[in-house]
Image 1: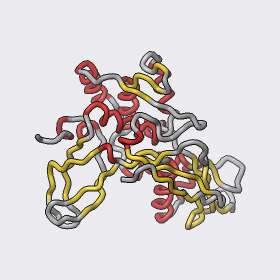
Image 2: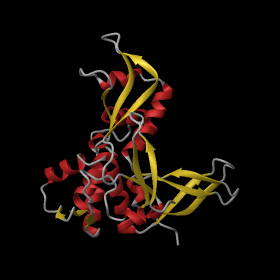
Image 3: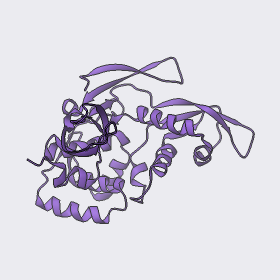
Image 4: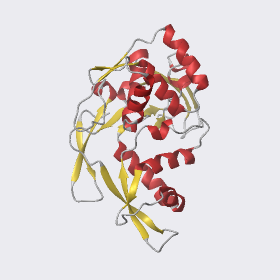
Length: 283
């Protein structure tokens, strides 16, 4: 993992370079990785007691989606944000604050809640993509998760150039460049179906990240752009949006004990895999 390295990130709209810091979770600690107006914001949690355990267990059953579940959990567990009392706010204020946060901030708080309340060790079970061996009880350190941070001045919007431009239905205007902003958490909170597949989740993310078309001032239906997007751009823009959004990389580098190959394993951050007893070492 990197240690406070500063790496230039390409902004395709101008020759200007913005800077992005990559920190491990255990270095960043309880500080939001995406600043708003250059403000450094720290947060704290309550203790997770059996009272919270019972309430969260009910939340898990009622929440229509993972996004809504995370919103509910953070609304209950956050104690202070930016030095101010968060637990004393009413429910609507809590939901509004979380929904308006950058997606990377909310996901980071959720990961840090696990680290803060249950420790750094996370157990993973997986099949090696190289030799096919079933590996169980593999222990990784959540504190080593890389977090892309945006501190101080940074570009709120960047331009993405389509590899394969598209033409809008109600005219002959060619769409070549898209204006990309930082997605807010409400994109996940509004995803109401816990069974939404990967393609649907991409649509949610793209719809809330694409802020307009460069060179076209009138209103553009983002759904039309997404529908007409070709496969290469579907994948490329996903990486581009993730890069611009910043926040934690929810994956761990693992080593297969059978063939000694290393690879990246996506971490399942659903409740049972992340906060349940199965996420802890067996001994």
